[in-house]
Length: 225
Image (tube, rainbow, N blue to C red; front, side):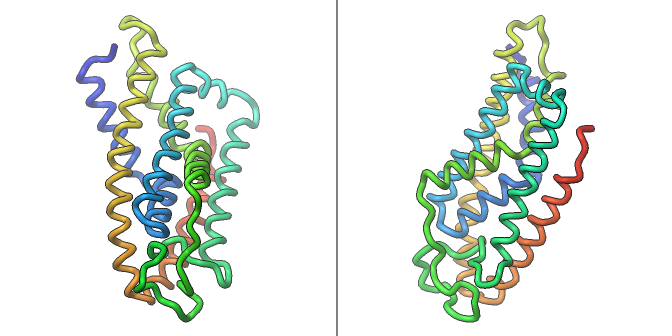
């Protein structure tokens, strides 16, 4: 099994991955702000379930094979970019509810001006989980992390390569759960702040939409290398 030093170094790199803005982070924050901490935590479970699938594939050597298959990377990349563009459009479309809206039932939510005209409809737990799962599964950032970072930490002389990969992957997922959990709890506090400031509610729709669009363009134009 990997040494304690190896696990600690890998945990530090995993923290850097978790702290890097990406689709998972944006989705978790948006759900926590729109529906509260509970919905954010369900979404978090979905995201980490998607990451678990990627981790197990990487540990079994399947992720590297994915990048070796012609057009497989392009399908994953374009699919993720298309999903982000869809979320961006939901932010800025005329009459649309902002993703970063206060939790349902917040009495301070603004009711006029086309923004926050009522509580954002609650998504059922199954949909929160499934969209979180898809968000993580279509996130090449996690797959690239495993392909580029995981192999140097595995030593065949220490035993099963699969077991070592699974252990390191469990460290990454554990770090992500802690970091994203704190993010979700913090986001709920931001929702209360936004609920009493209609100007912020209007501005964040366009800021988030632009951010999602830029990430989608970056993802669509990335190469395998």
